Image: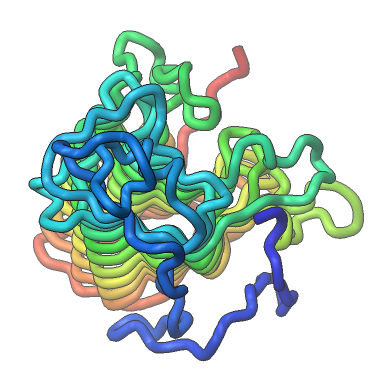
Amino acid sequence: MSGLGNVAQIGKKSWISLPAAVLIAGTGVLWPHGASAAQASHGRGTLTVSTKGSDVGNCQRSSCKTLGYALTQAHRNSTIVVFPGTYRESGNANVVTPRLKGLTITSSKSASRTVIDASGNANGLLIEASGVSVTGFTVKNANLEGILAEPPQSSWPKTSTSAPVNISHVTIARNVVVHNDRAFDTKLPPDSACPSSITDADDCGEGIHLMGVSWSKVTGNTVNHNVGGILLSDGGFGISVGPAAHNLISRNQSTDNAFDCGITLPGHDPRAVATTGKNAGKPQPNLAGVYDNTVVHNIASRNGAAGLLDAAPYPGAASYDNVFANNIANGNGNSGFVLHSHAPLQDVSGIVVTGNRFGKNNLAGDPDTGVKPTTGVMLLSVAIPVSIKVDGNKISNNVNGIAFNSKVTVVGHNKFANVTNRLFRYTPPPPAPAA
């Protein structure tokens, strides 16, 4: 849908009107009751897909052969049931277009038996509609993301004053997303190793990517052996799309993604914070930002970069009021939880890191902070004062428990075991000279 629909401004946040909320156990976080995707009654029958089917008819009286064809026959609020087998995508056919709002795509058996092989294609599944549910698939071998949810590119803001776009109530659940990001070229510099990606030239978009998506769930997925794991963003580097807000990322295993983070919440849209005029430095949640998201009960281990990351790279970017609770992060190249704020006129306030278990991390060292020893939690703000709640976590087997620089204030009490420096204050290196 265009814009954000029914939005009311409350403080610095935007809230989309929804029914009463329920409490996520152990987090103190409210999640909207009834916010799961595809709740409307199925429209115009159930479609089926089988490797023994044929791509003729409407896929209801007899199964069709490919998911791509079934999508051309589906309607709003339809259900597509896919029987076991391997389905080789052809010509980027697996696109859920905006007309398919409320579509449910599910396997009849387990993800291990129902495979979308996207070899040679950009994505295994591209979701461009609200209310879509994708459950129970293995998605592998895509050049970019295995599963990507975003508003249609044709609707993206054309200028700095154009209205944002957004989709909502997407559910991605109980899938296995593995061996994607195939276009990543390790021979190229890291910041341009995936030139075929419009928005993420540094990582091909990771295994699962929600961009400009709100009030959605990524839950119970296994995401491994991609460049990175799960990515939630409001645009690409300098590219505006729309807010990524009020999402739930829960009970996923995002592990062994060799070059990037397990779960990443970066603010990329430069319109999220005003950079000029009397409102300079104030968030603009109606335009952009990654905010009010909950990352809970996930395992984010053995990834090439951070286990969990909240970040903003340049002026105008924002990732704030996000909660990271009851996660496990061990053996990552960077720290178990990382906050990186790299410029003035950003918003990374209101971050809560609570109840997590951080083992030995920062195995590769953090070039942005200059901290090389093992570290459980790494906090960096280059230009803006930041207060962050890091409370009730168990941090073990590191040289540094929590590392932070002078712009960061750490609030909270944690349990440490086999940690040399519980709190370590460092001085970050000077920024690299411009090329």
